[in-house]
Image (cartoon, rainbow, N blue to C red; front, side):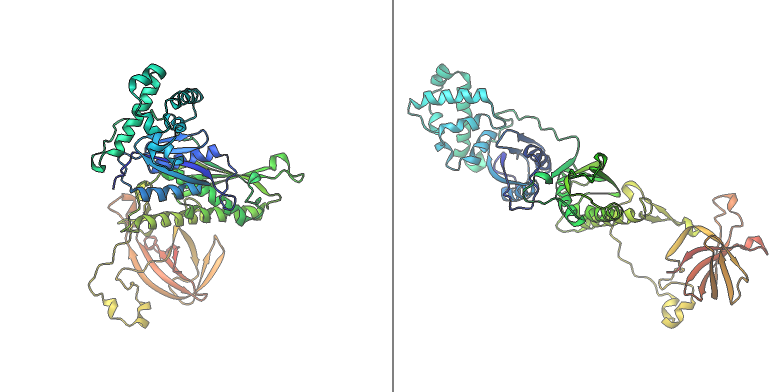
Length: 505
């Protein structure tokens, strides 16, 4: 449902000291960050940088109910440490006036002409002209805005000039808007007052100044540091979401309290986190940040309280700006999947965790390939379709272990496949007992069972070099309980070489 009004004015006020939000950051900086986050709700934003600070949103064409939009605005402002007063109107001047004037608009005193005429900034020259005009028209018995619109145009033009006439006409059009039926109210195609251009900051960063915060103590431990960082990340995520971006690299900079134990160069400490999968939510960033900080603080402890914290999205990637689908959990599951991949990647390396796709190849090491770019996205697993009965289904469970096929009819494959097969040495191939030796790790196994072979032919049709490259695969059981997947190269005649290719964990 489209709103009945065109303009929403959000006047900002500081939260009380009883809240946990860090408000020590300058008000101007937080107001600009909040205005940037509001770009997700409206593409046209204006910021009043002079006190009292306010954010204006152009509501034309936005499909939001007014009540729903107000709830979003209040929640968003709370992240940046603000309380809000809101008002809807058909023009920016009236919206700004109604925030502070609760009475009926025509009955508002003349002093509110100042707020109405210049809603986006404090204009000392214009305010002085309006005050002089108010002093004169009061002598005519005019006390309210509604009475001001009843003054003849010729009287205003002769005494105060074009400025007063235009101001009166704007007020009259605003009153006519209220008098018209709701289904016949005109929607202006252009603004009465030119909106100032809002430029979002080039750097997406958040500063948390704990040194001057009355309600937050300096950080002395990992948990207190994460609690403060969560607030900064929450603001950072809101700003990234407004730009339809995700963070690919995060910089965290800590500034310590001035202490004689610290050298000047040690007063700041910087960490950089590169995410294998770009992150768009705080829930995905915090676990990775916790693991990284925990490892760093074990190596280098906090020898002084942290007084200032800076978070910066050093690198970003395109994100999804679509609204949440209430009938599908795909977006939520995709966000959780990206967070899981990033956390695994932070443990084993950026290239250690990836999404793979199956390939129609014969050799096991070539039956998959890593997905990159837009291919590497979360997709729901399809439901398994019905299949024809397999002879394996009629074999008792206690006997299935000796059959080299899985319960779904395919050949059994190891859970851990080596990227490059490793050379093995064996004192007696295909005999029991036999000793197996791995030269690289100097590990030894005593073989208690050979199962196989399963011959995999080389892909001779792809390249002449793959002629006569068959492999005979065996599953070995050892005395220590390890189950190995090895293969022999029969093309070498009597000098058959044995390779380790995987583990059945």
